[in-house]
Length: 412
Image (cartoon, rainbow, N blue to C red):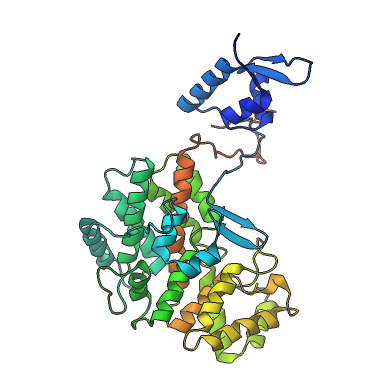
């Protein structure tokens, strides 16, 4: 007797919702029979296996009106906390550096730090490209250019096997930093990525505590569930774009005052507050209808834990206590004391780090982009395991129709 499967079993084998199984049956892709006793339906296991095989060769999509849920085992935001693979991100950042945290996020374990090194030939090409760019090119723009150059130099970039993707990603993360022009003393060849990045953002060598603070910021920003840049990266991966293109998609989405560039606005605000007090600066924003940058986060109604952890570390640096007090003054001037929506978010905390440590005004944007790159790569690896092109959205057309048409048009 042929094996019969329940609706739930079919859904699990196909990786879809129960409602989708019924849709397959209604469209003739699966045949069903009433289960003994008349409760529910059963399906032929061989038909299910054939449908699953066809889905791997072509694309078996759910009905167009069923929303796509992006499954991820990487990051969870729950009860006001951020977790990487089940581990509190704040705790991870306190104990481990960026390389070890990447190892954890990529599933290797925190005791298996990822070596972030760029091949010599690629480093030379990135250096030549950087030298050829006109003076005044912003550092975030240099990051985007370096991703494109690194892609052009990798003939194996379309090898989407996990090991190859992560190896290319490790070199890309290092290459993005190497492509930034040095502004301070260069560290030794075995220096951490945080130390190499510092030499591109500051003119003076770092104190150990300041360098550790930058390393902590990189870990805290490594991933943030399905932020807009991560969604952009996963959409690219869904189309089987190579990992460099995935990172480029993420970098493109960060070039926004509402996302990766928000820290630059917070930097300017905090600098004005340190120079003239919080009340007139915040008042000017409110009077002109501008939001006060660096305050609040919709996913953390009780306050951003990344900001709290980073500000705690900044307060221990030379001059940091005064900057952190200025952050508190911004919170107080913006609204009622203790109002959770008006607490500092990680953008304002990044600005506090940059101002305390003497980093450039663009440092927050650069740190955000470099830190988020291993997260985009981890999401790409997850998306490469899914059905291709599953993230193709459908539009609801509101424009004029051609004469003689009445119904919605199909889109590919």
